[in-house]
Image (cartoon, rainbow, N blue to C red):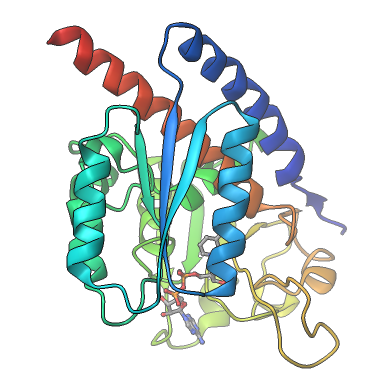
Length: 292
Ligand code: NAD
C-alpha cells in the first residue's frame, strides 16, 4: 500500500486565504487583527518559528510584531511586558515563544497573558476548553492536526487513536481533542511498556515525541492514518541537518493509509491555526467593546 499524503501546505494556504479575507473585513471596520510575539534569548529554532509566524500574519494583513529580550531577561521584565500588551487595545493576540530562558518562571509569564488574548491557548482557562469548560482558544498544533483529519474526512468517532507524547502543548491537548471527537484514546509516553503493541492498534496514530524517525513501519497498523507532529534536525547520519519528523516517512508510507509529511504537514497548519485564533481574538475584542 502507498499512503495518501495529507498536504498541510496546500490546506494551510486555502485557510490562510480565507483568514486574509476576514482580516481585511475587520480592518475595513477599523479593527486590524494585531498579534505580538514575545521572544527571549537566542534559541535559533525559536527565532525561525517566530519569523515564520510574523511573516504569515503580515501576509494575511495583520499588524504583527515581535518584542525581543536578551537571554538574561528576568521574570519581572517579561511580566511587565505581558501586562503592557494586555492593556494595549491594538494587540488582540499575545504569544510568548517557548522555551523561555531557564531563570524565567515560564508558567507565571504564560499565566499572566489575558485569557482572551492567549492565542497559543496555553492559559489554564483556555486549557479548560479541552474539558468542555470555559475557554476560547485551542493550542495551535493539535488544532491544526485535528483540522487535517477533518478536512481529509478521516473517520474519528469510534476509532482507536493512539497519541505518543504527553506534553501540555501537543500530546495531552491532542488526546483530549480526539476524545471530544468521539475516538477511543490511548496516550503513550516514555514510560509506556511495549509501545509497538499499543501503536499497532491505532486507526489514528499521532507522533509527538521529538525523535527523528522514531515510528517505524512495524509499529503501524496497515491502513492507519499517521500524523507526524515531530520537528527534528538530526546532528548525524544520512538526514544530518535536515528537517525530519518523528515518523520514518519512506517506510511508514508503504503501510499507512494516510500520512502527513515533514516538512509540509502539521507545521504549516499550526501557523494557520495561529491566524485563526488571532482573528477570533479580534472578534472577541470587538464583542467586548460593543457591550461597554
Ligand atoms: P516534549 O519533549 O515536551 O514531549 C515529548 C513526549 O514524548 C514526552 O511526553 C515523552 O514522554 C514522549 N517520549 C519521549 N521518548 C519516548 C519514548 N521512547 N517512547 C514513548 N514516548 C516517548 O515535546 P513536545 O513539545 O510535545 O514536542 C514533540 C515534537 O513535536 C517535537 O519534535 C517538537 O519539535 C514538535 N512540535 C511541532 C510543532 C509543529 O508545529 N509541528 C509544534 C510543537 C512541537
